[in-house]
Each structure stands twice: as C-alpha cells, then as structure tokens.
Image (cartoon, rainbow, N blue to C red; front, side):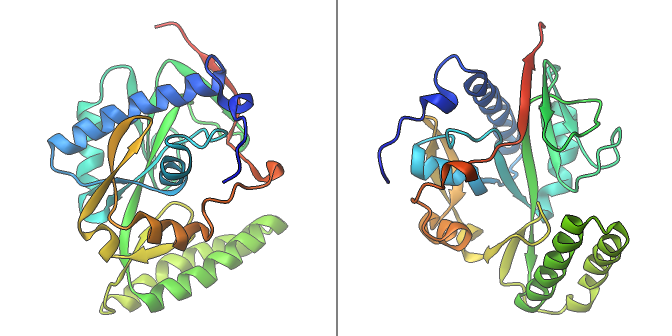
Length: 251
C-alpha cells in the first residue's frame, strides 16, 4: 500500500474523527453487553478492512458494521433495547418509520444528515448490527441474481418491478429449507456477499483503534472474498461515505 497523508479526511479535531470516536464508544457499549450475555459477534465489511489496512477506521469511513448470527439476533435486539445507557437508543424495523432489516444503535446527542435523506426521528451517530444468516449455495446464487435485478430497477426508478423482486426474494427461502447450509450471508444489502461458515464457527480477534474485537478466524480469506486485492487503495473518487454533515448536541 502506497504512503498517503490521510489527515485531510480524519485528522485529529475534524468532525469526521470526532464522529469515528463516538462510534467507537457506541461499539464498546454494544460489545460489553453482547459479551456479558454470551452473544457472539464479529466486526465485518469496511470495519474489518480498516482494521487490517489502516489499524482502525478507513480514513474516510463514517460507519461501523458488526455481524450477529441469526440464532442470537432477536436476543441481541431485546437485550440491547433493555440495557443500553440513557444516551443511546436502539433503532429497529417498525420503529418510527425505520424500514431497514438490520438494527442500529444510535447516539442521542448528535445529528447526522445522510446522503440518502432519511426521515427518522432519531438521526444520531450509529453502529450497524447485521444479521448473519446461514444459507446454501443454490439459494445464495438465486438470491444474488434477484438482488442484481432489484438494484437494476432501483437505478432506473422502476419501483413496481423493484417491489415485485423484493417479494420474490423473500418467497424463495422456503424452497431451500432442506439445502445444506454452508455459507453465511450478512443481511445488510440483500446478497452482497456470502462466506464459508467455517470462517466464524470459531472466532479470531483483531486490533481496531488499539482495542481488541472479535473477527473471522481467517481474515485474509474473508477480505479476499469481499474485496479481492483489499490492500489496494481505491481511487479518490471512489472513497465514499454516508454523511453530509454532523452536529454534536449538548447533553
């Protein structure tokens, strides 16, 4: 990886760095609650990539992602809602217009304006907690194909066709109930990726921002599945984040 000065993204004192540190605080609260209640988790996606490539956050990144296996996911939601401190709130589907399938833990004393223009009552800095579901290879292949069609019609603005394929996506699941489950799928944006169950049957650890968190047991294999040559930096015009602005509120 070539040397590059990343302070222009998240140097000390910048709003992005303050945001990242608040996300880290939220993550630590989540992890403490999950560990205390014997709920497994691991950091995933760009969070894991950042840990390997940068020792912490990808400099321009403004989210943290973790996975929880589906058999523990409802338990995690119930316990987090009960045990989160007063300055944080759990956001889940059906809560005040929130429509995503995954849960978020948000800070109550900040407001982020996101590029997607979300209209939730709670808009604080957040950590995403995705459900990692076991899936067979045939089911994964079919759902990935449907996912591609959903994305295509979303780009074209054809909402009816997009809705039809979303319904179809969920309807095919019962037909694969007997298929051997050999993959895990992180249920964030339908079927972006799947990876072998063996990578998380036992967990490893990794340092992220000088703290230790759970991770897949073969991080190199996991990241190659997701990103290919993951140590190569993306072009500057491909370095995306979600937030337009961030406001910190007085407690």
